[in-house]
Amino acid sequence: MSPSPLETVELIIKLTQQMSLYLVLAYLLTKTPVLRPMVDLAVHLPHKLILYVTFSIFCILGTYFGEQTQGAIANTRAMGAILSGLLGGPVTGFLVGLTGGLHRYSLGGFTDLACTISTTVEGLFAGLMHLRLRRSFQLEQLFNPFRVFAVAAVAEVMQMVIILLIARPFADAWALVQTIAIPMILVNSLGAALFMSMIRDQRTMAETLSSTHSAKALKIAERTVGILASGFNQQSTAKIARIIFEETHVSAVAITDTEKLLAFIGTGDDHHKPGTPISSALTMEAIEQNRVVFADGVQREYQCSLSRHCQLGSSLIVPLNGDNGVIGTVKLYEKKQRLFLHLNQTLGEGIARVLSNQILHGRYLEQKSLLTQAELKLLQAQISPHFLFNALNTLAAITRRSPDKARPLILDLAAFLRANLKRGTGEISLKEELEHIRTYLTIEQARFGDRLSVEISVPEALHDARLPTFTLQPLVENAIKHGTSTILEPGKIRIWAKPTASELVLTVEDNAGAFPEHPKESEGLGLNIVHRRIQGMYGPEFGLHVECEPGEYTRIQVRLPRRSE
Image (cartoon, rainbow, N blue to C red):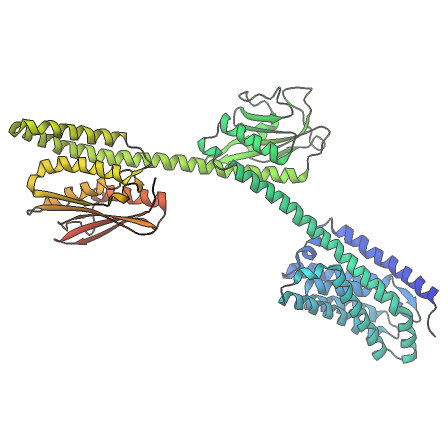
């Protein structure tokens, strides 16, 4: 005998009440770490174990709260098996279904075996759908409520078929299926879809918050790049505070060093003046203990240390770390009538990490610049004493023999030394470098006379090419000092350029071939400095390459990116 429409509606209502329990539990789970494996799709054993325990409990509760009907139990047990399979895969779905089925079997009844098998099959079926979507790279479809509804409906139809195939007597099984089929298919499918919809909403919310947080952090990082390279001072921190204030929309932003307020913008700027000593005990606590201090005005009281009438009611203080520990703090404030959002708290900590890294990077650039200047001073010190000693001896000899030739030579020497002292740490044009070399070689040729000849072959089209200061001159000096000056026959120096589409290769060659296979540190220091400077400025693919054929030639190639002014 078929059930009346009223009986069907009553059963739907009772099963809907059970389904509501699932949804309430789902909501409670969103407030606990238990939901994390559901949101992230469990792939590791600990997460799968959480899913197994959670949904096994759901299956058992679904049976307990079920409605006795014609010697059987109409229930929402299937929801636990189906959801565990969809979220955890075939093994998890099978085990949850088996656990729920065995519990149902322990309660007896003419459908006990059929329900045990059907619940296990439902969990396995949902798990196989998980596997199919994963292999087709469509796992996001698992969170589609319509797809979940369809999977649950098919699984419930399978359950009804299994009851008809296994439960005996068949007449009772057929009467039961007529009674429970529509309510269980409808309620379990709808419940699974709603449950998955709640999980999907949690994923969307988490992704939105993460995206918002990341976008703000990236925007702040982008806008603050390079500002702290000039130092951690009032000028640079004022710009940083303004950017943070505009991006976070908090009530006020402050930046301090370990002793005084460097910058302040927002509510309370009438009494928080940059340059004043730190008076806040909370700020000193953050500095001394190197930890985040949060005073929300509720769990931890906050009161402005400068004015009783200050409108600020909560503060987040995050230490800024340099290479030698805490160097200051970033402080975010909210007014008394505004809540300090957790997002702003997390963002504040992220901002501090970004600024700390930028401070360290600025210190690194400063130290790198100082090292470059020191290396250039070393090059200048290497060039000047040795070269000046020989040049003065040459001038003394020429003054005795040919006083008229001494004057232009003195002017060349003065021009060389003046250019040598005026050079900075940046780039110059190839034309300027060649002029500097010609001045240097004029003096050296006066010293060696016919024993030194020089050939420079660089097309005029390349004169605008850029290269670091002190690139070619140390190589030419090295070719004379450790090359041509050590041989008996006349020395020859050749300088030429070979451009490509993206590179400029400059070559300095002598005919001595006296470059040592393992040069002493003092002999190779100038070349090493030139090589490191080029690589530091342009990358490891550029620099010096030395070829030496003993007694024949020493050829030093300089590879640079082809760049014009």
